Image 1 (cartoon, protein in one colour):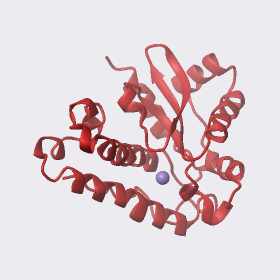
Image 2 (cartoon, helix red, strand yellow; image 1 turned 90 degrees about the horizontal axis):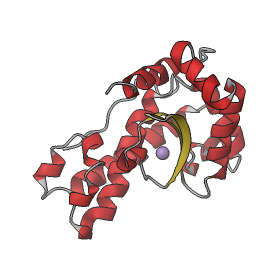
Image 3 (cartoon, helix red, strand yellow; image 1 turned 180 degrees about the vertical axis):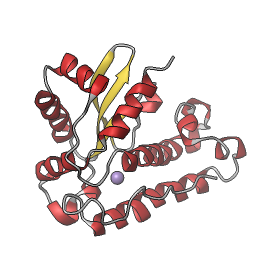
Length: 203
Ligand code: MN3
């Protein structure tokens, strides 16, 4: 069985950038819904039900075709949100440091250019989806995915990601996705991103 992980901070901890009501609905109802649907659709498939979600998302080809899309959507949603909550923290004015900061400068020129590129990926994603910073053998790169497609399913390791579904921002920002993304930069948990960056380098 899959379970909904608790937020690593209070629902209101990301205020004023991400409002409490959005966090309650986003975490409890949206993420909670993916977990519930995933448990429902896999209820007769104990092999998959017992997997870690990050393992499951690499095994969609083993799922029977009748339920594969439903499993992929909900497992992707569960995996994406599970890392997303960790990638945010109450605003502390942090910036990337050390090896991660060096890699960002090396790949994108400077931090500001990197921010612009990830913002553009989030703005350019038509409809619902995500924008990601990926770390791999070839270094850092940016990608975006539609709906709840997850980079893990494509063998990629995201170290930072932003949810650009309207449910992530509509209550506070309505149609202004650009304002949401600008605000979101204040609550990026760079310590977590750096941790994931160093993990991604492991063989
Ligand atoms: Mn979401």
